[in-house]
Image (cartoon, rainbow, N blue to C red; front, side):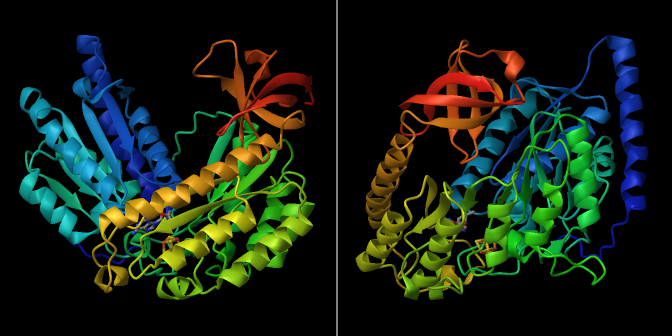
Length: 482
Ligand code: 5AD
Ligand code: SF4
């Protein structure tokens, strides 16, 4: 990595960044007063909700600096790629996009190109960009996001690429601005990093070791969100079930206890969380889902593969039977619970019998939805060096076999809603049809309905389903609950 530092990020250091925000803001105001023009920015986010949330924070800082939002990269003054390293496809897309920007930058040399996120935590990626994409202005990583204003300012009088990537784990950063548009749903980080080292996964190398935020900071943030109109929060972490382990004894609570605390927040309607690791989910978490009225009946519990021997090679620390036992327990304790999962096809050494095991788990659990991934070799992970890598074509064949089952079951699960009333938090107008409103039910299904209008946004209503589709439920407004 370009720079090695021992990081101790205090609130003071984050506040220090306000100075740089102010400085850039003054420059932008000055430009506006002289020319009547505002500089603009655009950010493309790859990957998971963590990245989405980080991008929200970057955009918030840019807004405070006086930038407007550009509609396309072609006329933006700042283009940001917040990258993901989990699969190769997303990486290739970033390189492709950077290639495209080269021509735009030739015509508009003042444009600033910023690349950040998980890909940048890998030395070979930074080297590649330094070699082949010299038109990039700024590179930083996942641990020093808070320093963006200072770094951006430094690029203004420089032609050379600025690289600032730290390969140590930051302390938990509190007090960062977030560009919450105060819609009705919001993500809230409860922890960062991952200690699990699943053998296929790059995340522990790019996001660092696991560290939890203090409960008081989380609760205060959610109270603030609720005061600004947020009705639903999704608590985010790579493995929320191990929440709290890194906290001082005086602050330490479990994830189940955190759910119960968040559930007490007045005005909040719904709580979701992700991701859960089957090896760490406790009965107490299942009881919290059962007991807490705000915690939705929805569990995203990635199983990756059905075969116990493959799970061992993946370093997942549970068997097929352990996994199915958790699901059974959740089904018994929480009526109407919906499940989703991450499923991986084509891990090294996978046999047809292993794929049958994966399909067997799908049939037994009956997922409402699932993310299916083709295994992607990640440099630096143990699985990349394993023997018996599966040929691409075979991976695709197996993937299609699993996908067919997953889609059939989720369609069948939706059919079960036919004629039933379901509770929906209204989010807005449907993108496809002006006269239809849309929202999600507690099981996280998209529900489109007629009979309502925009005055219902943020309300909890009942909808009767008369047309369940494979990926959504359609129906009519029955009543407004609150
Ligand atoms: N290849 C394919 N999918 C992966 N995931 C993580 N690493 C890889 C990889 N190398 C998937 C896992 C994880 C989800 C977030 O991404 O299924 O749960
Ligand atoms: Fe990756 Fe496994 Fe950690 Fe999830 S739990 S982020 S799959 S190492």
